[in-house]
Amino acid sequence: MKLGYSTWSTQKMPLLDALKELARIGYDGVEIAVNPNWSGHVDDLTAADRKAVRALLDDTGLELSALVSGHRNQIAPQAEYEVAKQRYFRELDLALEWAKPGLIPSMDVAVGGTSDQWESLKNLIVDRVSETVEVSRARNIVVALEPHVGQAIDHPNRMLYVIGKVNSPYCRVNFDISHFEVQGIPMEETIPPMAPFTEHVHIKDQRGLAPDHEFMIPGEASFDYVKYLTLMHHHGYTGHISPEISVMVQRRPNYDAIAAMEQTYRVCAAAFEKSGVPRERRA
Figure 1 (cartoon, one colour):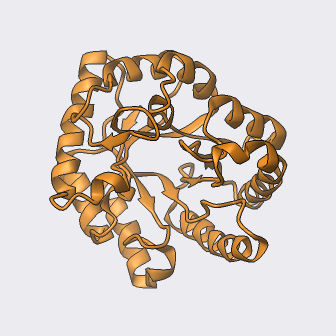
Figure 2: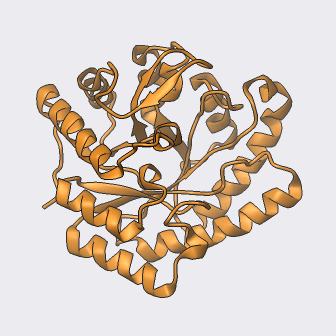
C-alpha cells in the first residue's frame, strides 16, 4: 500500500502549493480534486497549470492515484446530467494528460439521491453509472464509485448491487469507510465485501451516528487505523490509502490545511508502522 492524501482536503489552497506540501511532509501519492469550486477545477486550470502539475508530480515522485470528479449527481435531471457528463469528458482528458505509463488515475464519482429513494432510483442509477463506466472504459480509466451516508448508495449491499448490474471491471469502489462507520456498521462487516471491489479509498476520523455525526481529522477521534490497515491488507487491498478532510471540518473558522496534512501523516504513518502492513514509500 501507499499513503496518499486527497486535495478534496485543500479546497481553497492553490493546487501546486498543496502538492509541494504533501511532498515535503512525506506522502507517497495524491488524489487531486478537479471538481467545481475546488482549486484544481478542471475548467479553471490553464494549459500552463496542467503542465506545471504534471512536472511537479514528476519532480516530487508523488503518484497520482485518482481524480475527484465533479460527476457526483448521476441521478440529476437530464439537462443537468448532460452538463456534468460533458465536464466529465474534460476530466477524463485531464486524467490521461497527467497519467504515466501503467499508472492511469481512477475517477472518484458519486451518485447522489437520498437513501429512501433507492428503490425508485436504482434502475436509473444502474443506467447512468453504466454510461459513465462505458465512456471511461473507452479511455482505459476505472470508475471508483463512492457510497455516501444519506445518499441512495449508502450501504455495501447497494454498492454490490450496482457493481453486479453494471458488470464491468471498470466499475469499482472508492471505499470511504467513514460513511459506513457513522451508520454503526463496523469495519468487520464492511471491509470483507468491499475490499475485493475497491479501487481507491478514503479514510478520516468520525464521531457519533448519522444524522448527528461529525467527520474529523485523523487523530481527533477514536477510529482504529491499525485494525483498518490490518483488515484491508488481509482482504487483499494493495492500493493507495488516501485520507480526506471533509468539508464539515474545512468550514471550521480555524481550519489549517497544512496542519491537517501534518497531523494526518503522523497518525497514518504511525498506524502503518504499528500494524506491520507493508508501505511502498516514495523514493
